[in-house]
Length: 85
Length: 251
Image (cartoon, rainbow over all chains, first blue to last red; front, side):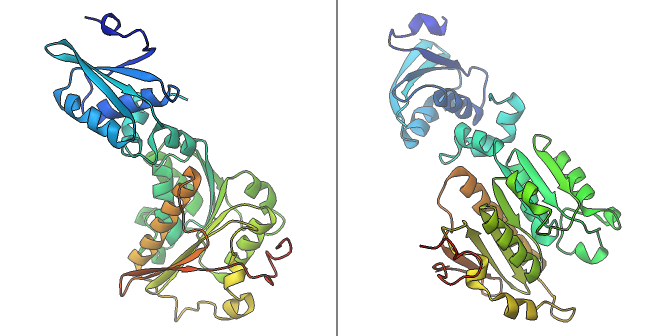
């Protein structure tokens, strides 16, 4: 399933970090979030289980809003983050 | 600018920091620092500044490498003895981080030559080893309204200050030039602990990076380090309203 097929209407931004390992999962997602306006929402497509657990916590620690995680398949997920600062 | 894959990996430990991230790292790429003196302080300072990805780094240095330098001047190797420090420094640092534009000024600074050079940089860093140069660099930084980080080490002690012209105290507000130059280091009292030089240099590098990022700095304070007792003290200092260097616009 592609990232577009599970995208919400309000979402305008996405980043594919599949194949990345820690800490580059977070770094690449963070760089993508920095590209969007405050209040904007980023969909992060990933296939790394460690990142699946760590990313929401890391973004919340940074002061961003973790919205939700959606299951794309057995090994792929989308984490949705709203840029707050 | 977009980060290349190599840059994401090289600067990953900065990119992870809340205080830096991608925006801060870009800010460092677009910053410039002029380092005066590539001796003991300059050696350690330059490694961290160049490693951090400051976009442009100027080095003012006209000496050659001497065997007695190698106890603390970690930029140089035994094979560099007799070569120009500026060239040896550039070779070493360009290999360390090819992203950085390193420019050499193989000159001794004076009142005439410094204006064009100072105006090309965001921050001036004094890594020289004598009072005369420090007073001169302070005067030039005030004249050209350039922020200055000044550091010094002798024996087991050192200090660091961040001078923002017409905003904070300047070197002349703290030290008396006639008295200090009179107490010039001579061959019998020029001993210095190698690692204490590194400590002061890394504090200077930390303050430089924070200043360029707009983070909290030691501004308005004199930081003093004692390597014997391993203590750091910060003393708040006001501008001297009668300072002969920075008081003319003082309100």
